[in-house]
Amino acid sequence: MNPILRPKYRMSMEQRVYTQNNDDHSLELVGIPDNVVFTPSSNPSETSSHVAVAPPKVEPLTVSIPQPETVKEWYLQVKNVETQEVLTVIEILSPKK
Image (tube, rainbow, N blue to C red):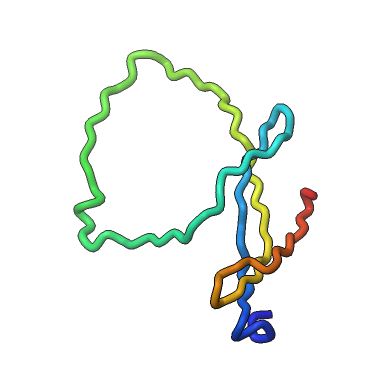
């Protein structure tokens, strides 16, 4: 679509992330993620460490912790290149809806 919209407009795919409560199935907006960049360490010794671990004195207790389900919502956004004004948002339907 971008070749058709250029040079005045541009379309981008955006994402919202929600967590779903297991009890009442309500959604809570976690946020709209930014770009993430990972860089490897140039010195391998910086990431290594030495840890002494004492043996446990009692048996460990295993418990289940409920984890909310993460729901990702994708949408297309058309913006004016010059003003960055959002002209329209197109929701992408998913199997959950």
